[in-house]
Image: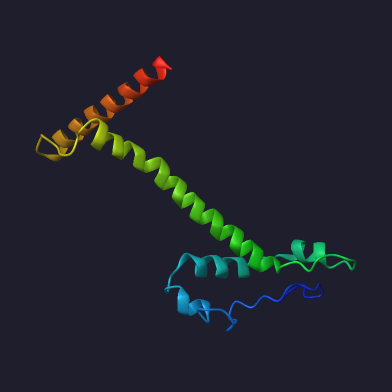
Length: 133
């Protein structure tokens, strides 16, 4: 690995000390963590290594590759949860508040027109609620 002149807390993704004994035994093939790990391994982290290459009293830092992987994975999971949080409430409102559970019209064009009316109704309710506040 590059920049190994600094002293880091040992980091070995293939370690056999924890349960489950290896990351590969715990995560399924094609998991997001593998993609992030491969991507971070291809990056140049020389800026992080240069920061800790100087001698001096300090706590021993975690390896930059491990920290970047943890941060990117956490961000990716939070971004997915946020997307879900943004996308789901309108569907819940349409179903529970407006009582819309199935289309009355048959045919794709008619169903699209009906759904547009449902969305218009939802937006008008929201606008009315915002004006009351």
